[in-house]
Image (tube, rainbow, N blue to C red; front, side, top):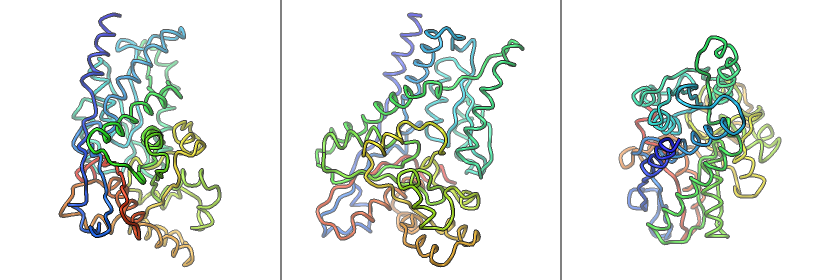
Length: 368
């Protein structure tokens, strides 16, 4: 047991987030310099595991402790295979941590994403199980439940069971929240400037809640914005009940819209416990959820038969495709990261001397 504890401590020291932190104004022609506005970037795009780096070491340690304390089957490399749903970034940290701790690692990912998102998992030693593209996050959750529900039969056959850091429930959310809040402290060490607002991908809420809460501790007047693709709109509908249907004439996460989904990691399903997302909304950490669109999503909505009035509301949204075309020669950011920057630019319109903070989660190669 002492050797195991030493291994966990060693990996916690090794697996740390090392983002690049810089100002984007010199790269971005769309940011008018005469306004005095600045966009600050926390860039994780070159590090496997991105902003999740080191989270899963702590989650796996907690999972092992829970199994032992509750008298269930002890979770260890000899008894369990670890499994985790992912769209890419968090999955890399999960596979690295699981392998270093001696586990077989299985990741559940939606089909239909770029091959460049699956290869890192396999290259790192993970096994990829695909689920329906249209079901996206709900499909990942369903497959995870299916694997876990099969554990009784696996025990009868003398096989290892499947175990997931999701077993940690609220503890998983708390560990992730505390870990990710550190990115704001890293920013403050590098750039000692006050913030007027920060923009994060909403996702399951963990990427926003911890950092967002820390921003508001340091800068009480700062606004926190979370982005979500209009192809999903599930978190938006949670924050503004009924508003999505009113604006676009369809329910959130319409199958035809989800076929066009290309902002991986920006949404998570309803009907699944999402403590960090719920607390982001209920505690007022997120001031606004910004729906972003793109050319493909708009065409998908037209195929669904969205009325011209509702189409106009789609056109009103920030189109990250437009910003991507502007950035193609100066930055190698991935889709979700570009969408965060696009939302930031929209909020800077008609403003002066504002400081915005954005997180770059991945690079363009993850979308090829």
